[in-house]
Length: 310
Ligand SMILES: C[S@@+](CC[C@H](N)C(=O)[O-])C[C@H]1O[C@@H](n2cnc3c(N)ncnc32)[C@H](O)[C@@H]1O
Image (cartoon, rainbow, N blue to C red; front, side, top):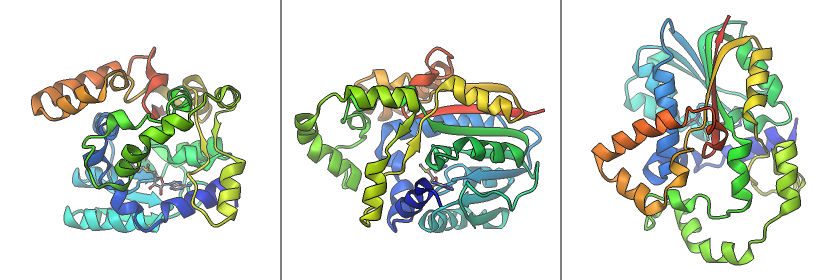
C-alpha cells in the first residue's frame, strides 16, 4: 500500500476527527467561504440527477445536503470516525434511509460499475491525498460517473504562498478565544512561528515544479508511530483540466474558492461574517469573483472543477 494511503488512513482515523471537522464552518472563515461556494456549485448541478457518489465525504457536509433534497447518496470515506459522525448527523436530519455509508479508499473503486452514479463529487481535496495515484483516482471517479462530476483538489498556486506564510490560517479564525484545539495552537504559536520562519527558496521552487507537499519526513514520522499530515498532491489549473478532458469529461468549468477573501484582513472578514446581510452580499460576490479564470489558481486551498460526461 502507498504511504499516502497509510498516512491518510491513520490521520483521518484519529477518533476526534469527525467531531472536529464537523465544526470547521463555526471556527474558520475560509471554510465558510469554500463550503458556500461548493454548495452553490452542487445545487446548480442537480438537473436529471437521482444518484450521487460522494468520495471522501467526511462528516456529510454535501452528502446529507443532497439526501435532504431526496437524492440517493453513497457516502464513501476512508475514516470510520468521519463515517460515524456523518451517520449521526444524517439520522438527526431524518435522511438515513436515502444514504449508504461505505468505508473505503478512493484508490479502489472497483466495486462500482461504469456510469453507476448520475453525479460524482469529491470535495476538499480527498483526491490530493491519494498521491501518487491522483490521476488514476480521477479516472476512476470519471468512470463511475454517468452525467456530471464535481471535484475540488489542493491548488498548487494557492498553496505556494503558504510556504512564505506560516500564519496563513490565522486571518480566517472566526473567534480567537475559541477553545477549538487548532485555534488555540495557531494563536499560541503565532510568535514562535514568525521567530523560526525562514524563506525556503529551494523547497518552494520544488513545490512549484513538482506539486508534492510532504515526503520523506512524513514517511519517517509515520514509521515512528506518529500521525503526520497527508502527503498531498497539488494541481495546476491547466493540469487538472487536461486530466479531466482525457477522462472524457466535457465543458469543464473551474473556480478558486477563497481567492477574493484572501485579500482582506481578519478584522474585516470577522465584521462581514457578523452581519447577515453583509455576509450574504460578500459570499455572493466571492462566488462570482472566484470563478474568474484569471484568479482560479489562487483559491484559498482548493481548486474546483466540474465537467459533463458526453
Ligand atoms: C477535508 S475532508 C473533506 C470532507 C468533505 N468532502 C467536505 O468537503 O466537507 C477530507 C476527507 O477525505 C477523506 N479521505 C482522505 N483520503 C482518502 C482516501 N484515500 N479515500 C477516501 N477518503 C479519503 C478523509 O477521511 C476526510 O473525510
